[in-house]
Length: 226
Image (cartoon, rainbow, N blue to C red; front, top):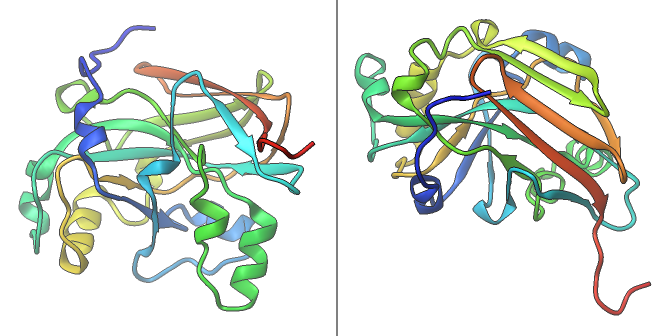
């Protein structure tokens, strides 16, 4: 499958943060027993969690599985602060496909205690990501089919047309809270069908007609620990 892909990952590598949007598809919110939000649910992930296409997602000890969440990533192309919706798309540099890998047991425990999700979402390899698609290659980001397979079996399929909060609104809203810098990424949310993957399984995901990505899943190895 071919697509117009940026010649390097320099823009993404410049980024200072990953801003993730939770519960931005109504069906996904409901499958996890959450109310559909009235305003965006935001959390941050460190850029150290990036994993390039073809890498191995690492399950940390003592966990046996992680949940997959496939998402459209919006790559910021120029600084944005207090941006109105009407000009928000001028700040987009391109798009990518990303996975928001989640240690669901850790997240559930944190949520129950009213604590942040950082440990559940921010570990190394927890943001597998594609190369960047140039903005011109994605003329209609509000109508993209996203899919994910585990060992060749379809697990997630959804369309960005079902986003509760659309991309211009997200850029405007987030930029009213924090400055978006070149290379920062907004993970726009995941459609329904999230579920566990274990060591030895293979993940493939894509934006239909544009790109595919693939990752192995393994156990995190720590030197000196058997």
